[in-house]
Length: 238
Image (cartoon, rainbow, N blue to C red; front, side):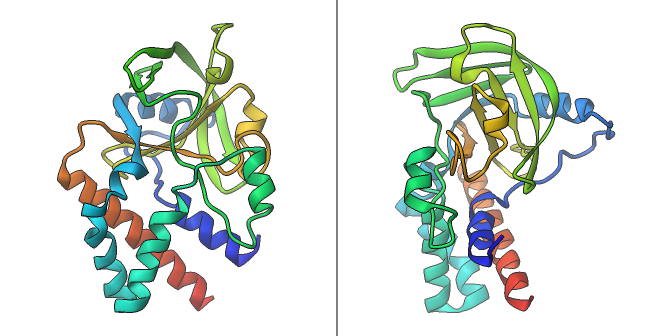
């Protein structure tokens, strides 16, 4: 994968860690079930919250410290923008191709969902008015790799009316570890495993607790900046 693509994907996707304190199993079932316990709560899209103008300085501080005033300010702005995309799927593929000439990831919730609630193996979503869009019980299926770059856990509902909520593909993030969630949902597991092609191309939902306080906002922005600055410096050194 070209360096330009790798850098952008890093900027968009690197805020993930393995679930902590869970004995590993070959099929990932223990980790997956523990994850669902650890993410209980209601979430809204992350980036509209943390890219609000009042948090600009939190973005700039670590970038300026690492790169200097001018380069740091430019880096902070770039990181804020790369995960603020509004298109995905074929529209994004048509616009960005393989990403080598620039791209943007969409990280909001799709299919009319404004908030998503995780309650163990029951997952539900509501629209902006609070009306329920979907609500299903899910069962763990298997581990799943997204284009060989991200590893997560696939869940499926047996409800025949689930449509685009048939599968949830959860990354191992939790509010306690990376202060946010990353996941995908859709009707086809094979398509969910493709990062830059298919109906979910250039889309990875990032969720943030609706009851998050200022401290958590500070932590999630700082972590995002620090991890991506470190990755960028390592790529430059290579």
